[in-house]
Image 1 (cartoon, one colour):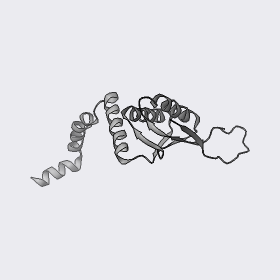
Image 2 (tube, rainbow, N blue to C red):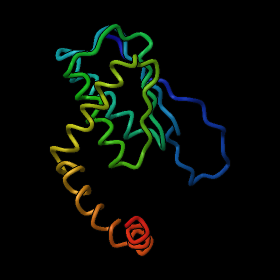
Image 3 (spheres, helix red, strand yellow):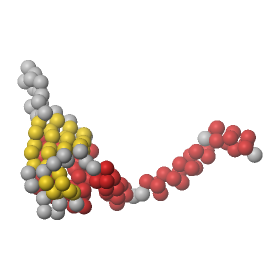
Image 4 (cartoon, one colour):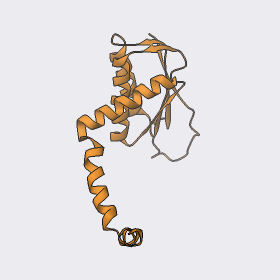
Length: 142
């Protein structure tokens, strides 16, 4: 597996206190991303997230396949990006793989924080029923 790490050019500044890290880093993995290559890919993503000022772009144009381990690596990278306050963007990712990443993200969030449905559904219904206009609507409906 070959992974290239490219930084987008940054306009020069005269401010000596300016952050010298690139604002955006592009990661372009090559070949398969699977249980055997996942560790090095994860390290590359973590380094890119640490080094970039604001954004990491992962371009999957040259990736032939991703397995479930690679999808978990992407979700962990998403969580790290959120924790660091940085943007992580996936490009050239097939829709089926994007759906798999989304499903894994939801699964991880439910494991970490519980189901959103059980937290909000009942409380939301109670809140909506207590609104003044909801009471008016109930009175006019009867």
